[in-house]
Image 1 (tube, helix red, strand yellow):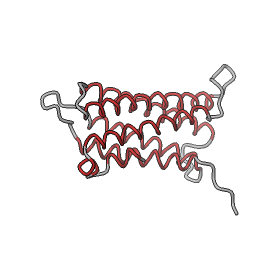
Image 2: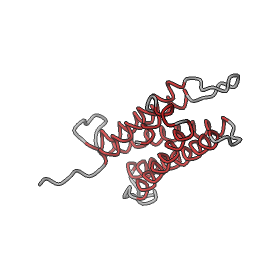
Image 3: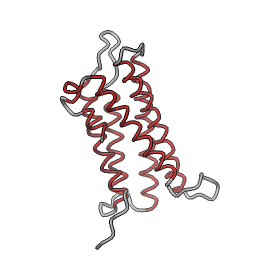
Image 4: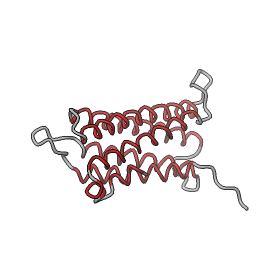
Length: 189
């Protein structure tokens, strides 16, 4: 949710670049905590010879997503430090962001495969199906954001700040939807 707030049009102008980058960094910490919980609660043991393909793909999807969130921690911390005047190169901000986005895309592909091993590729009545595909959409949006956030070496500016912000905003909302769908349904009263 904090990634969506940080990318909201006008937020950085209203609070300042450093507060905006702090919003992203705090959001990345929550993101990593959620990914760690997901990894620990996959209900899957470490993959072994007897594991099914769905079990292996579920576990690796969660593990790779956790690594992706750690890369976002590095990226958002570097951006925060850069906004406070610290000597941080643009590569220290962009590369972990790009690698984290790649990790998310790989994790989403593995999650889709794991889901389709348990259900079908097209099952709009299944909450896990929706959650998996919202996760894939979020990964694609974060990937688009990383492309937009590449820095032009000549000017030092983002290649496409609008794409970077839109991708982050849409990706954050997709991941929020995926997380909400992954929650167990409330019991009927």
